[in-house]
Length: 620
Image (cartoon, rainbow, N blue to C red; front, side):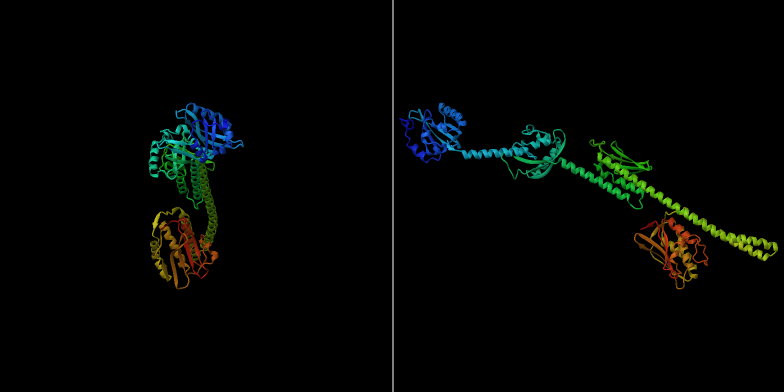
């Protein structure tokens, strides 16, 4: 019988025929030697072979050449050991189509238990293999992404030990996966400070497995401190095999940059505030140095342990809980090429080494810039003082020149008169004219007394600036009332009504000299009072930041062109007046010695005058 029609003796295959017709898988039947006796239609479709091509040893040619040796060895081994055959392999059709199949076979036994053949199936698993392959590729891609991604990935298993540790975790910490995965001391390696680790674990109990951007301060393998922002979403995103997992981002550089930025902002703020202090009008140098030194501790890296001092001309200005320590940074103050002082910064505790001891290079640059600014400010103050002194000397020189001209002019007249009357006295005595001689003697005495009074006024004026002692608190209202009371007779004789404000601020100064100011201004008002009704008002008013005191009359008034000249020595606007022209000059000298200024306000002749003045020391 031909091989294609060979039958298996004593085997009832009616059931096999029925099963083969309806089966969705390929079915084959062989004899004990592996020669194919039958294949069903599904097997032919999968293999691309006809029944005739599969019979005998033909089925072997359906197997992919790369799998043939492996499948044949497995088949014959199963037959030899009388074990079931099971294998995955590929079918390759004559048309070139490759299909993955799963082959299974079992022995067919005779009634006596002898192997008479094999029956088996092949299942098309090509799509499954494709899906599995895609899944494996996806898993490999995900594994590569997780391994290579620039974010730390870590996971713990049910025993609480690390089971995942990617490349970024290795890079940031310096610990390799082999050192961390399964290591019960992994956390202690990352957090060698046991107190910090305990605190972190206690905090974790409150946060659980659901938190974002919790910053951990860990220590890398090389000892470098690191800051990692960790997020754990394993509670809402569980992964099989991972009890807890999270991701972390190395923010060490960012935090360092932020810290450096904060330090730079502090430094700029210090320089800005120092610049504002330096540009104050009427700068008080000692107050400036105290305010400047107080800017220093908050501008350093560790303000809580920083103290500072400025030494200038044997005066010391301190800030912070000042104490000298071994950790010091200093810079010299130079003004006009000479060392005039020193700025010193101290740390109360030791800190890790930086560019200059515990101090940053930026702090050295900051201190030198501060020293330069303070030196310039001191220099500017000294220049202003020198300028003010030069201006004062110039003014004094001008006053002295005017004073000399005034004295030479005012003294020349009585001296000339004395000389003339003395010469005339000699002639009259020689002539025996005693009456005319007596007249000449009286004129000589009168002019001599006049010169004496003027010399006394000059000496009094010259002494005012040296005898002022502005340290007494004065009730100005009481002083004015007392002065008005002393001059009551003069006011009554001139039929003058005087009006005094009820409220005056207290001032600091020389009460005797300020009383003289009120006397001079009242005497001047009485002397030049106008037509009745006669009125003098004494009061004060606020104008901006100043308190202005005034003595106002309704007298003959003053032409504006004389506003400045009336305060000059021996200057009288009314030649017929009985004054010496010294009172207003003395008044101005007293007011200026008290740090104030004096001026006159008038609408002109016949409109009265108001003498106004300020004082440098007023108590609120």
